[in-house]
Length: 379
Image (cartoon, rainbow, N blue to C red; front, side, top):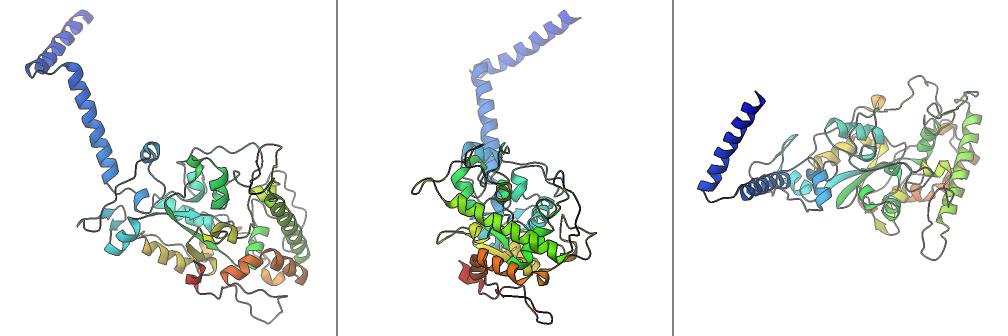
């Protein structure tokens, strides 16, 4: 039976080879031509169709990353322009065809919600570039990130690393911001520090941190103020230590046991927001959203880039929100000495982003967490 099948196979192969000989083509040449044709077709489709990443969504497709090929964008003159979210308007196409949109995730500014909104639309933003994030839903990172076996300001949790540091320290394959328009969310330093205090990852009695003991009442103002003072003091000292370079213009090497960061700095929680937006006088992040008006700011940005996305209402927005903590403290519970320390540390954020500094919060006196600034002056 096997011999008959083998004979049939050779007769079939002989007929196919005779076809090539009739047209003066060798089998090797014909096979090469077919392979070449398939490669051309695949590359043409990949480079000429508007993909998620090249219309302002997520990162460059893996094939383009590998080949380092400049993608082709659909021109405004094309009559039938569509992406997965519907027709592309001329205004939207004009913005989206030039640059893709990437998200810079500053801690405690609603970033996980933005990453989830992106994931639900097939957009890779923030942490989703680097790792699986089940709480957000993204399970297909597109960058070859492996966490270092030491604490590093630049390389630990790189989605929280200021772009200027990530570019200096990380391999080019781990830098998602090249040739992209960047956006981020900033927040009033007073309310942000309270959010850091209740953070389940690095905050007071953090529930996701191994070995945490829940011995004190987190809603005790004395406990909160003491924690904030200790945290800001340690963070400020760690940043100053990091900025003291080993020589003129030489950036510190980071490795296990060599200029290794404290955990508080490596996680980037409560690092000043100007560190993300600016590199000296150079503005790296030109699309700035304000947490206090996040829904409207986000919707306006998405409209600019022709992305059909919006944020849920604030009461259901937080991915890691503690639903059981109904009596949580607010910025009004910060003591004057705590406020003075925050003002000194976060002065660049207050001044650059238009937030009002105070010496104390007085009962009955209203303080607006919103910034008072012309946003166009930021760029």
